[in-house]
Image (cartoon, rainbow, N blue to C red):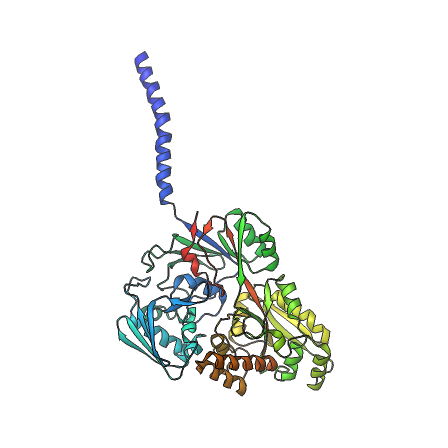
Length: 512
């Protein structure tokens, strides 16, 4: 009996000792298999995922991780290889791209030269209504030389072509995915480092690692989850608590607060995007250049940056200030300094001695510029002009933007270090995103000339003239370039910023 009891005691002791050991070993084994997930907080939902169609920054930030282009911009805004591993330019009308071999779409099929031809021709097709169409306006033909070589032939020199090809709007897509779905707004079949797994509207989007990605060792994590959190303070709180790993925060006050917080990392650099205040130039009174000039002479950019961005931006003219080779300083541009007396005189001359009232379409999201619209509203009172704010939901804002349904609108425009890429599509009479419906022969002439010039000094002179004419015509008022800011949990390493806001370098980010 005693022997039996002793054996039971020994068994119990062994059980007590061994089970925790097994549990610990099991835990260690499980730990090795735990998914590495980066959670990114953003303030607004994506408006579709078709790279050839979308315009919203919120969509582009997802596209950064889902698709590839022939070439891309690195963190220094230098054009580097992407799907094309190299290229030749035998003359200023011919570009030959040599593609990487073995690159696969998310559906498992290899990406080849015919996919590049299909994608570029889809962008060029007027029926697609792609905002990237103007980037390729001078492309006469896209020819498949062989399975891994594509030749672009231009009708005239286009100095901005390589830079333009870095746009998400010219991503490479498979024809069969477009034909199966009609478009790619709700699906994603790219070659990018991550694949779309789940999209819960207005809540989250989950991307999973593309194990066939063509860059060895990338991505470094298994999943990326975008969480839509409209309030900047909540985004910062999420990073501090560890619920978020990275947050794109555009609110200057919150960034200031984050910089005082020891348990997060704030990354900030001058941006190349531009905040604008634009007019539908086919609607009175904005058909009259004197009215547009009067409003331009009333706005104080420094005050707008201070009040709407808490100083996290730089006043700008038509070309982003970060494009230092091209941008003229404001003191070299007409009507860039407030002058109420001159503004009132112009209004009187235009037939509005007592001012007038109009609407500004805006949204509470950062891109929708409500804070900026409120400062503009206040400033315009100085010349007797009443601005009524039409604050709409984000989806409605995009719809109004697409349909050109506004008197005026506060936006943030995707800029570039290359002036043709930014300004041609924005303000040329045929520009794909000329939402101002602005037509001016001299502006068109300068834009056409600038994109064809290959001598830097000649291009510089042309764009200097263009900036002055645009500022004087004022179909839109270029206000400032916001800083690009991200707040990171300290466990995130390897993330790099791009001045256009791209999240591509989530691909190289790791969790410690």
